[in-house]
Image 1 (cartoon, rainbow, N blue to C red):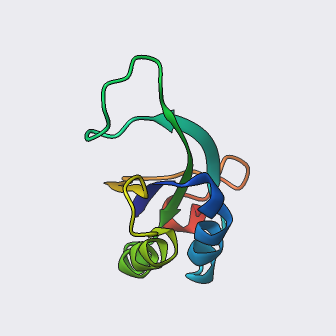
Image 2: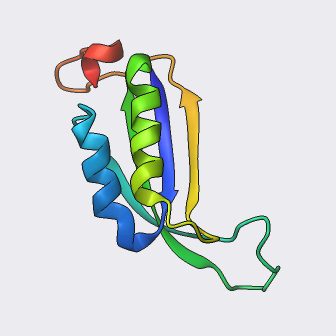
Length: 104
């Protein structure tokens, strides 16, 4: 399993979520976040608002989901965001006690 954390422009959140769900992902977690990119000037206390979309997916779906995110989130201008992918060793659905990929 892989955890995808996509940081995207706030106005594109729904398009990105829809693109992820079209690839068979059932659930996502949304956060409003603020940050500053490595190339941004170091202005004290000034951050840019973005949305973070988090989901956990089966390994075979990863490339299609990443392509879908890039297709809808890329405006071609600085500040479009980033996507981070990490490995998830296990997962547990608290109520059903299902583990691994069956829990997602």
